[in-house]
Image (tube, rainbow, N blue to C red; front, side, top):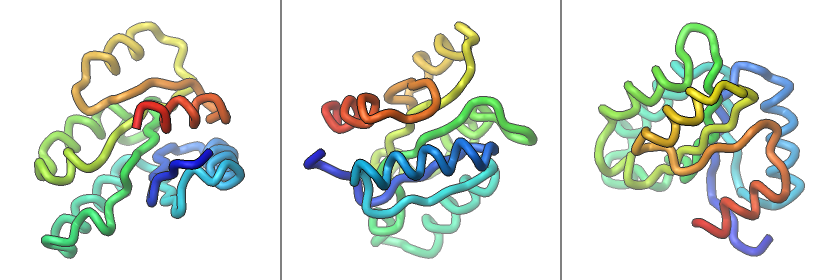
Length: 138
C-alpha cells in the first residue's frame, strides 16, 4: 500500500476486535497513528475536546477515518452518528466514517447506506482487501 492515512480511530466495545483491526492496520502501513476507543461516548468526547482545544489547527489532531461498530452498549453506532451530526462542519468535512461491524441485519446495512456520514460498510475484521478498497476510494 502506498497511500496511507495520518490518523485513524477504531470505535468498538470489543477489545479483541480492536486489537485484530489495529494489527491489520499496522501490518499494512495503512495509518501512521491509531486511536482506539471501546465506547462511542468516549470517542465523541475526544472529538468534541479536539474541536475546543485545537481551534484553527483542528485537522492536525482529528482522525481522517473512523471505523465505527454498530452494536455497542450504552451508545450504539447509530446513536454515535446522531451526536456526531452536531459537531462542526469543519470536523465532519475532514473525517470519513466507515461502519465496521459483525452485524448481519439487513436493516443495519440499509440504515448505514442512508446516513450521510457513512462512506462505506465492511464486515469485521478488517482485511487487506478492505483496506485497499478504502485507499482506492480515498
